[in-house]
Image (tube, rainbow, N blue to C red; front, side):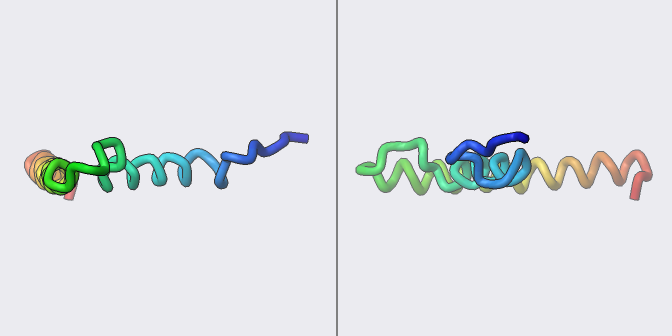
Length: 65
């Protein structure tokens, strides 16, 4: 029987989503510097929007959708 670790919250997908959420929430920046935290959040959000837009454009050019 496989034993669950206490820090295992439900599997690979949920732990990956939790890590991604922490990444986009900028939890790895200094808590005292609010400007750096918000700038990091904005930058990471814009990079996600750019990635999705480029992926859509790439799929459109290849006539995948």
